[in-house]
Amino acid sequence: MPRRKATWDGKTVLTAILVSSLIAIFVPYAFISLPILFIILLHQSLLRIIFRGPSKRSRVLSEPGWDIVHTTNDGVDVYGFSNFQNHDADLVVFIHGWQSSSEKFIERMKIFHDRGLHTFAIDMRGHGIAPETPEWTAGKVIGDVKAILSSIDYSNVQNIHFYGHSLGAFVCLGMHHERHQGVWKERCSTIMLESPMVAYSPIMEEMSGKISFMLPLLKKWAMKGFEKIHPEIGRLEWEDIDIPSWGLPKMPILLLQSANDRRLGRFHYDLLMKQDVEIYPHLLDTLTHSKNRVNKERDDLIRNWIDERIL
Image 1 (spheres, one colour):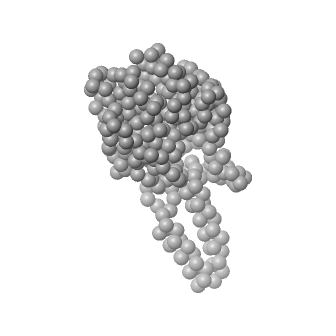
Image 2 (cartoon, one colour):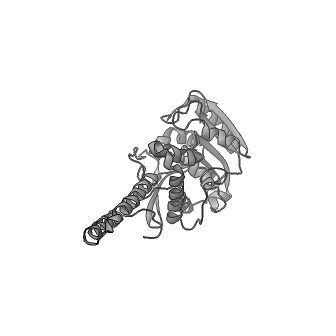
Image 3 (cartoon, helix red, strand yellow):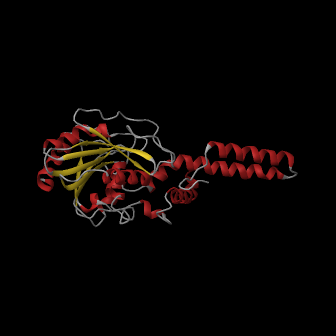
């Protein structure tokens, strides 16, 4: 099996089916190979579900004033969108959520840009302008974000701030694990999280659905699969995919949480609130989990944060 890959490709699956069928036909009592093949294929099918990418894409950012930034990470194209000022300023990096794109941040990014700040947005793999990827993981996205942030000219950049929505918040948190380093981390001053995902374990439980009785096995397969895709990380335990082990910034955090989050509920908010961090939480009745390009209550809090913590 190729390095950095957890699942078989179509050719390998077909070969396994053909070989097992031939053995069962021509070798006496070898029909026992068919149940074994079934278990192997079931394992592969569940791994594909665990590591599948998004099923749909949002629009690509195409607003005037934005420049496309391109780099590669381990041979994969990575894309971002920059809108820098012509003077020294802080930089705000935006990371969108699942099945979203940088285009969804236009109105929020304008708030920061109008305050004289540099803005930079990144499309995750399989989202927006970014290419598809076999075996989607947040770890791959973190590698992409690190790669593209390393390609930026920081000559007129002062401090750096991150804004993550939902899964994008999970990426922001993961980047602050001690294994990740870079100028973006050295200069990071504040983090802004909107209706964040801060743990993968409840997502895995949700994915198990009608086969929840297999959850202990699915957890084990997921960890083994992640280790194959990311061998540089080493051995992982289940708690490593939730905060605080996943990653936890040690700088001020603005938390903008939908009070009635129908997608993630309050689990992630409550878990984040239990951490030993400098956090400024806001439960917003007017905010839903997504489709909030403009929200006065949230946007006013963002403006206050810029004035009090960034400028």
